[in-house]
Amino acid sequence: MPAFSHIVFFLYNYTQYDCAVEILRMGEIVVLVPDKLFLQITSITAELLARENVQGLVLDIDYTLADKHTPLPDSAVKEFVENMKQAQIRLFILSNNNHNRVSRFAKALDLPYRSNGLKPLPNAFSYAVDLMKLDKKEVVAVGDQVYTDVWGAHLAGLRAWMVAPYGGGGRSFFYRFRRLLEKPFIHSCKPEDEQVSK
Image (cartoon, rainbow, N blue to C red):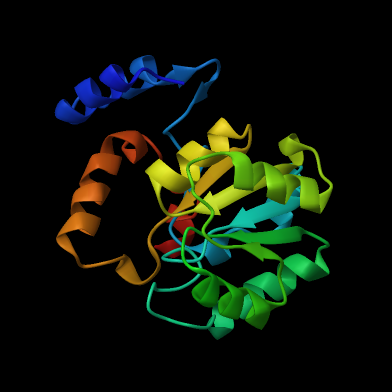
């Protein structure tokens, strides 16, 4: 795990994108850099997962599967989940949000879940993998944030795929400031579905 002083140094120099790889390297995994980036969750297909030897997904909710203030999944997300189920991809919802929010959303999709996940701590990620009865190399965590989803997944030994915030993300100052601090780590990541979206 990178030293706290290194992280602080980098955040003060966040325009120096190339430094991220050298400062925050953990073995062969850059802990705060997503392994893949997507413009939307529905670009992750069963065919892609088969090519990547992925059999399970750990999914975030807020700004990944829905806007933070949307209580239930929309039709596109329902179709995405159904396609994954038909392909026998195991799914688990992991969120830092409260029980009422997470349970209602997950039950609408008939998926197992854990609320108050304390991401980026790796414990809940490991719990999800154990519940799916898969090897870590067969599981990918999908989320919209570097400091919770990407970092937590890598600390747990999983691949981390990042999606652009659903609906454009939040509007608060804190949300936008946090996104600013994430930019160095996604700067060099080209969206996998960029050509498709044009």
